[in-house]
Amino acid sequence: MAIFSREDLRNHLKKREIAPVYLLFGAETYLRDLAAKTIADFVFPDETSLRDFNENEFSLNQTENLQYALASAEQMPMIAARRVIRIADVRISATAAKDNLKEDYEEVLTRYLKRPAETSVVIFVADEIDKRRRMSKLLIENSVAVEFAPLEDADLRKWIRDRAKEFDADIDEKAANHLIGLIGSNARKITSEVEKLAVAALPDKLITYELVESLVPNSREMSNFDLTDHLIAKNKTRALHTLKKILDDGAEPLMLLGLIANNFHRLFLAREMMNQGVDRKEVARVMRLPYGKQEDFLATARRTDSAQFSRIMQRIAETDIAIKTSKGGGGNLGSRMQIEMLVCELATF
Image (cartoon, rainbow, N blue to C red; front, top):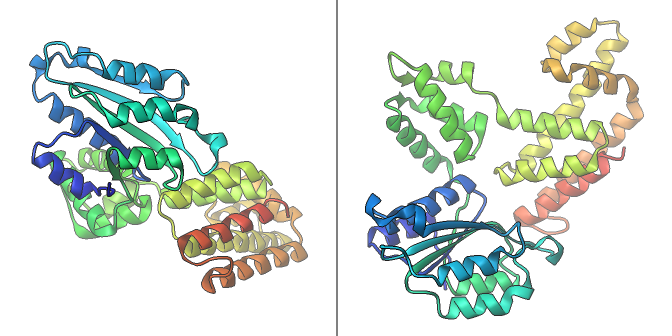
């Protein structure tokens, strides 16, 4: 069965078509979770259906919950046409060690998927789906599978305008573009910020560039600061975790590489300024360092010598060439691998 897009799912629901099994997955978790709620709302269009008695959620972070969920799906609904069973926190990773929907469950899952209960709607909400794995293929081929990719800029602008209207406000194009630049493609964060901005826009109810600039933190810059902090602390595990988050939020590998290079360049400049006798407060002001990060940043700048900086910048330059020449693999996957290799090395310098 083909994988649906968000638009495909919207059209599917507009036709009042409700499938017995859904698989919702993808990087845009806010829209994924919103889709799960929307499907349930279609099943329970009013309050007379005893929704509280007919809607259940089971997390696969508890190993026995798949059997409980499928058994619940087989039960008859209470004074309603259907039940909704949400199976959350599904993980089928690239490596079996991280799975919580394991191949041990293949038989019981196959048995249900081949003959799903007519009086239940089962929604699998996945945090991670590797489409190459057998259990992933089993779910995709026997459900309405919907992938929630990060929103493109045009869709993000529409999303921002629509959310502003929901909060009885307007937002101009310059402000919307600036909000995207600060937050990225994370719909959950953007929705939260639009709500706060709409309140702050009273009484005019117009969200302006200046209002966004004054109230919205630069999430992309903050995440990059976190990544550099972990590299400086030589904490490879946390650096790789932060890197994954930044890339999953839609950052381009080359852009991220530039930000990493810029932060190490700033370390070098801070060291040179301190060597010339510039006061640390002035260095922190010129480098625009957040107050809580000043001490660690400046301490690292003092203890890192020129030869070490040179090696770091050389490795960054080599990674830049490797990405641009598709060394080790082309496309986003190859670029991502090059960045991951660089971060592993920089955390040991």
